[in-house]
Length: 329
Length: 281
Image 1 (cartoon, helix red, strand yellow):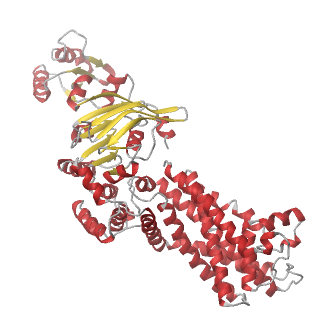
Image 2: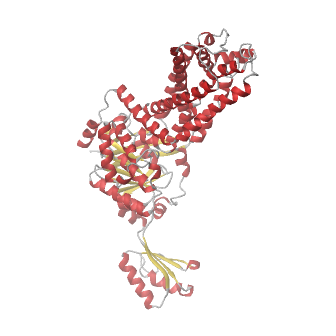
Image 3: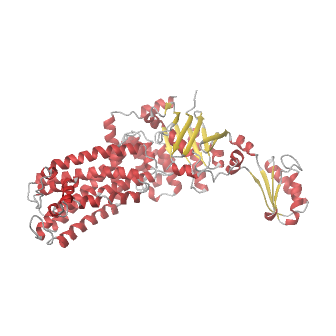
């Protein structure tokens, strides 16, 4: 049985730019898929195709068991969309915003109002319910936007970069809201530029680049493909860097003398890939101390989106084709 | 999938027409709330026509020839139909800018992802603009009375003239909707919504007697849809300067004005809804 979100061979071209070049996706019911990729990779275009905002040139998509191309209006009744920008009317109060959306989901005015109050409570906006959204902070607007997407408790949700532009505290808060939502059984497709976010929220991750899904798997699987974690050490005295590098090389992934360890002399920095996490880090610190090597900084680096990208595509994440996103506007 | 069937039941579409009316009213209400909360927009919308009333009355009144008379009082009565008509067409810019702003802020995307009637966002907007136009006309009529404008016909005819003005204004907001959906920024919609209105409203019988124009220009002015509304209002108000041109719209201005407005609505509403359906912010 196909999942709650299913797409096959989605293609969308804007002028000369192929924004989607055959995207295949499958999200089982009640799970979260993180669509991970840089700006212009095709994440937003994918979401727009699946939420009936954009008609793909070819391919097919089924959302909540309904064919997106054949019955877009039925799909709209079963989905909630929280777009890249908090799409709330800033001159309406929080309550008015939610009530309007409820009515446009064809609820009766009274039902819509009751539902609005419920959501305001749930999203910690009850105190600000009668203030215009203009007075809201970025985090509050995001929460209101998310609440608007949840007015009918749709079985399938789409969130396009829900935490972009939020500070860490608000991001954490929104993550909690999303986790809560998912634990209620909602199927969610979420796009993000942050591996950390996908890591926190998604069961599965699909990496998108230049309009294609280039890798998929759990976050652990992707990180493993990227080469796992590394230890980075910055030594205090440049003269001791060779000694320190030799010491670290013993712990490198492929063992000493295999060329795993890299040294940047001018930065006094040594990097070596490892497995073993924090325990290993403690051991390395002890050994450096025993040898009397003073260090300015030491840390365990986990793969970032850039690392995943670099290893999967051979190019860095940020520079990838911002033109495609522009063309989509 | 039980969740799906349940959500389908929650939102049964009902009769398509009643759904469309209901959705349009929900959106209109939203735009009216905005109007109350951003009164600057309404106030600035009033300043320009009031300025025109005062400036044209006192600067041009007395030096322009209307039907053989250069009396300032005659010009003032002549002028008001023109100013009223120009004012209602300027609602175009507001509609365009509002819709462009909704696109820009992602609200159009939100609306398009909802199971609502397709044209409702635009109909709601144009209805709200109609309310604003009516308010503007009311204030303007009071100012016009203060500077000496008078009507010389029955209440029914005067109300009929205002009805025609509202219909014309409503038709023009649909042109604004198309402009708003075609440009990238609200600023572009404002200027793009106004620029072309100057030739349309000036190459007409609004401010000068078109029989004083060179023949080819008079021809354009006589067939200008905007002139039909002005001529109809003058006739219905019993104001001086009714054109004696034998061009059909000048001979049957009320009919011409209604036909032009209905045509504009039919064409531009179709275009606007089509653009809305494929809109990409």
